[in-house]
Image (tube, rainbow, N blue to C red; front, side):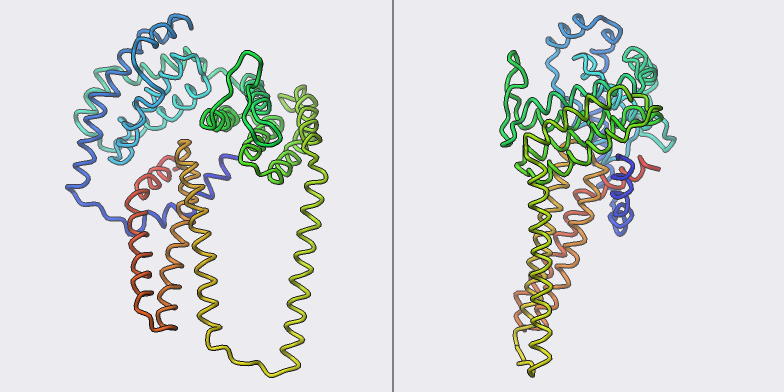
Length: 415
């Protein structure tokens, strides 16, 4: 599933990169920021946690409680490194995030960031001298290998990650009601926050992609199930039902050679129970009837219009063209808002591949709006629409400035 999202995102990466220009002074400023965060935040954090990599869980937890770190301690440093295109600093930031997760005995995020840091360290582009020196003297590569070994990242396969993913599905399912309200997943647990729930959905995605060599229809179905629960949280029952339906079909299609074949029946049974409690059969059937009725009404209206047009001379409408343009503007504005909202949600979850695909859609809408407002200016003679056209162009520039480098970095990671 991730590969499909990456492909979609990268359709727009080259376009986002096109036309971007970077002044030397601007690049130096970003590099200085990246070096400062690397020296003052990333390296000290790694150094403090490194002695505990091979310690027992309890020792790691006790030590971490005294360090004053949060899950996002190295987050800004990673962003600054990406902006400055300093791969070693970015990789060290990802390693820092992996170590923070490991200190809390969370191996899903640990192994995900360990993988990304390895990709970053493999680059051979010129590196800032200060970063390069510390990269070697602090033994950052050997620290990564030590953590990778301690967390078992290279030895854990889908037979390990699959049950972890199924556990996340159970947790999410128990945490949200059919009405979309959050609840405690068990008697001894607290009600999760929306942010915590969405982070668990994100962990589903990471777990699903943890073993890229051995795939399973069960993990594919489980990943869909996580997103079905997220639809419930968003009060989108129809989307939740359709996703559950797809997930159940995948689980039932599991073949005997699937590494998680023994888990398929249990998963499909749980999902079918949730499907039934939501009355998804009726929800999907009702939606299908409504869609067919809407199509029939559209067809009848089109036929009536064609008949009326054939039987009478059309009455010229001087506002017809401008009204059509306004309609297009309204639709494109909605498309822009929707794309930007989805992009920001993916970006907040750390999924820049997916975010960039939606940022590109939003950018395309802005370009269309720029043209439409120019057309409306020509049609009406109102100079205010020229200002709106320029405003759309300015928005394009702002979006390129804010997200262009991030999306080019996503392209770099892919290739």
